[in-house]
Image (cartoon, rainbow, N blue to C red; front, side):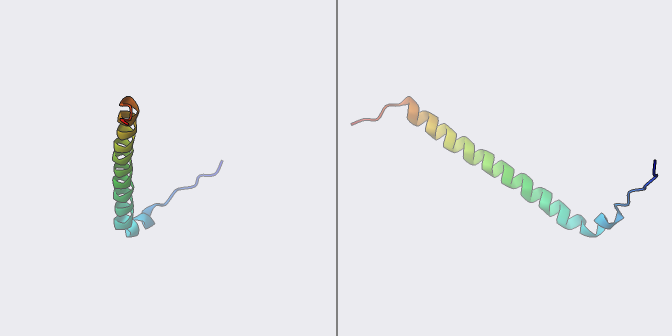
Length: 53
């Protein structure tokens, strides 16, 4: 088998961009979960209570 050594030293140049991307991904995930929770709770409550005519 070959003995290849991985070299990730080039990532140091993009450290700020990588951290920004991770932060953006996590914040968008949390925001979408909160939005889904709010919409889902509203839909569940709307199904529980019948419409008044």
